[in-house]
Length: 59
Image 1 (cartoon, rainbow, N blue to C red):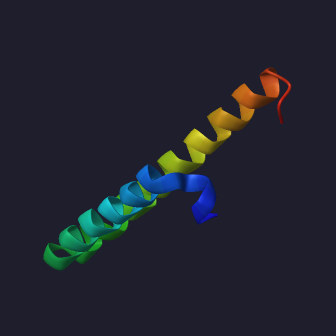
Image 2: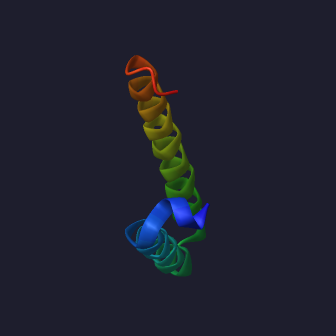
């Protein structure tokens, strides 16, 4: 999986996890809400990409 992300994707994951860690350090409940929201955004983005690729006949 890491080879498909590339360097920029790995840096993005590290920055995201670091941001959640900083928020969790201050407020654990808020960090949990942000993590759930981030997971939802990721699922929506994955669905959009899958539909776009399917419309081009690539998936």
